[in-house]
Image (cartoon, rainbow, N blue to C red; front, side, top):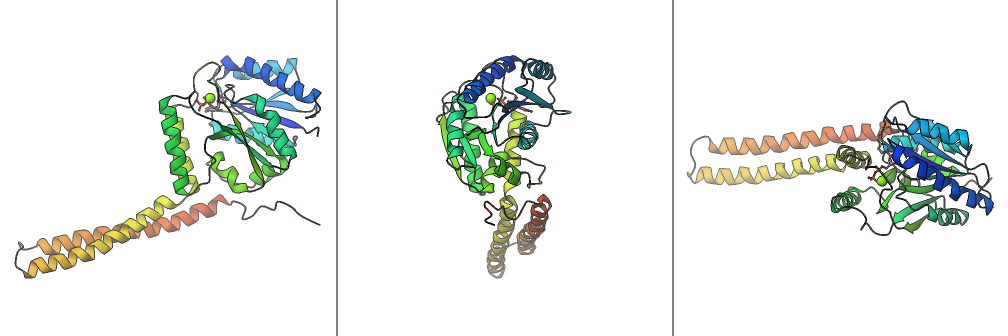
Length: 314
Ligand code: UDP
Ligand code: MG
């Protein structure tokens, strides 16, 4: 017991919610400290993701009033995933456990106790999973469901209905720090770490104030990033397509020859048909092969660790 807990909160133009978020989180941490579940050295770490409003000034003023609130400021808007990474990597140096959550109080902070409980039971990663999505708009639900289905099909093992509300232990974070990629998609990366993990369920509330900072553009780029960061399946599909078109071209070749010898065609049709299909197939196939190599280069350049040692018995 008495773990040092850091709660990492990425914030982009969140001046409307920050006061409430920081006071609720502080109250929560103080209760946990008094119950001796976490150490008094625990902190809230706000990450200002290049906000254009008063977010950073607010974070600084919270820190002046209460040293339990700290902050880091990014030089400009790098997006949620990068802000989150910056926060948890900073927190890792001081904390035993790190919980990441959104600034808008959509994630229920009352399940923090359960998360820590699961951590004491030996889980290195505890995912916060929302019970249902009836507070979300139809559009958000639809895009999210499609996205999780697509990710599973592509082979990335994401936890359904889990956003970025999660607890990670120091050693899980240290393992994550070995991932050198720049295109971040945490929800896909963290399950690949392995380690024992647990789930806590919670009701997702509506945004406390302000508007969603995930614009349609940011949502799509997260989805495309997720898909292309985790699999070379799209490239493999081109290879297969090329292969099938080429096989098809052989059938067309035979068919065209038969028509030709039956004398049912005009001059030049056979040659045209055969060449269009054969060349089309070959081009796709070649593209796929080139793509396979690019895919390999891509996976290599990430320089991800080949393995992560969970335990070491000396
Ligand atoms: N966020 C960020 N940088 C961005 C966009 C969002 O740090 O460029 C933060 C935002 O402040 C919030 C979290 O990411 O703490 C989730 O964003 P939001 O609640 O707007 O997304 P939604 O809940 O609508 O998916
Ligand atoms: Mg939100």
